[in-house]
Length: 94
Image (cartoon, rainbow, N blue to C red; front, top):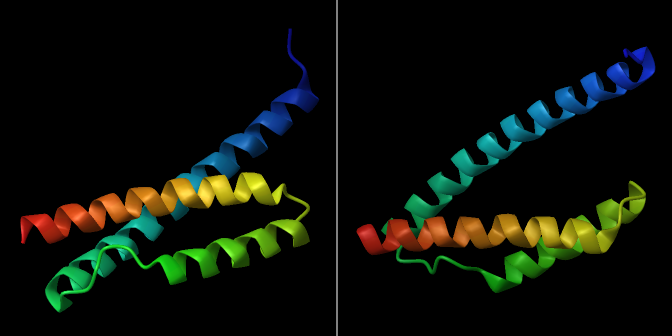
């Protein structure tokens, strides 16, 4: 059975998911460059002050977008933790 309305919603979701994947890929390309720079400059992989500022900023944006701020914080924390792991690997490899 075909439901045109549902199919349209699903197509939009698929497009959004694709955009999210490409945005995350671009973000990680930049954070990998940051990790290389930190390693060569002798900077620590993590920057807790920056992380907290980013989380606060994202929570504010989530509220403006009518998105659960707790969800947005969990999402960003997951990304930050992965970025730090990448930065640690770059540091330890060099």
